[in-house]
Image (tube, rainbow, N blue to C red; front, side):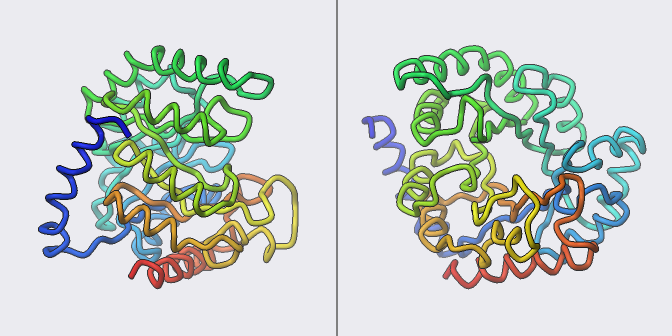
Length: 299
């Protein structure tokens, strides 16, 4: 830890007791629309509060259809639907656009009161030496500067997710990215434990390192994976409380850095574009069950 970050952590710690005395730390849950596959917003929005979330994030094809539905029904109608159900709008996931074509999406997210867009890095890491990978991460950050600046000007953060076959995939690439964007507004990290070694110390250390650059956190473990058809009880092992990952150390790390950004209970079904369980009600119940499991570990 360099001197500047050390001083920042001391300053943050000095204010934490007063904040904690006023309000206990809790995860801030957001619902990913892709958990309901291609169901329409009219079916999903009534479920948001039932899952324990206060806002929704929209996904496009192939994981969902809600981002396309937003354009089809119009921003004003969508905003009215949110108001009707008493929920907020968090942002969107746009892997389809990539990190360098987000200008129009930033405007949409800002207009609707959202705060983030999740996307991936540029290129892949396989075949690169550690030195080459580190240089490529630095080059990516340089290319992102004007895009991050635009996002920051509009009150939006671009969250780069660590993802398989992506430049930002390995623990080292995450560490380098976190350090390179430390003083850079408008860009952060959407941390997906699923795509990392299922080592609680490694994952907890990464949370502490990323610290205030965490844009979004997925409570999503690897379980038995999500890349091939399997019995539903095995597929659901991506969910907290069903797979083998001990979430307690990760929650302790999130609490230590006072992470209050959006947290999504998450998994991918196979094939993509279907709800994680056959009906909206069953999907909601499963997300609520996972939240209950995490709630018990927060104390």
